[in-house]
Image (cartoon, rainbow, N blue to C red; front, side, top):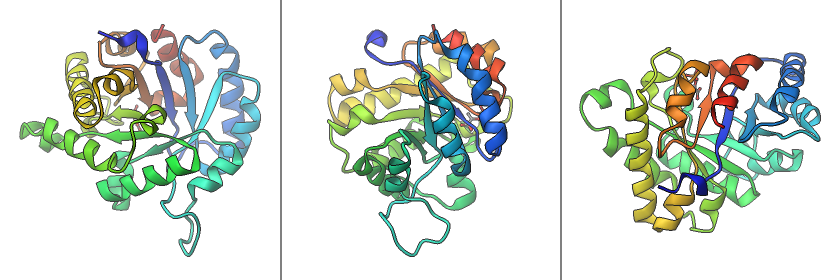
Length: 254
Ligand code: PEP
């Protein structure tokens, strides 16, 4: 329908990989490859790499994101990082609600919403992750789960603020497992998310919002996934750690 209205965005989620030296080297490898990229390219790096990544990407078309932020502006939250701190550093994007945060660190839809609102208030652009676990897919409740996660995460978010949000549909059973959702499954759920946005906001917001797929995307399956009507980009884990593989996906977004 309106795929051309939306920016294609390929974002790498480096997770807990690469210290500052490896981060610099990976970005230096990526820079020449990405010069003619026909999509937005983001690298979401560990907190300790942000400074190096911001320096290394200066003057290039690669943007930098973090992988989480806290909901409070400051205070007694040992080891946490606020959205304002990221903004002050020059960070543009932040991944929120990643399934690993939900699974291992007790994050809930409510805390994801709090973090998302804090990120927007600080001027960051959130990449909001939603997705079902295998049991939920097998129980036939994928749509309900993804609808609920999306609706709670977006509570209190205005239509204007939606311009700064990317949503990533990441079926948890496909993350880091080598199992990819079929292009049809990815398209179906991304379409369901778009329908929720139309209900919550308007058809215009639904058509303008970038919705990525994430879950074992690699150069060999990227073209088919990215060719689907509702799949506007990818959130990439493992394949973002090798410049050639990440570029293979960026190239498939043409
Ligand atoms: C992710 O961590 O968001 C992800 C999609 O990982 P992978 O590509 O390794 O499945």
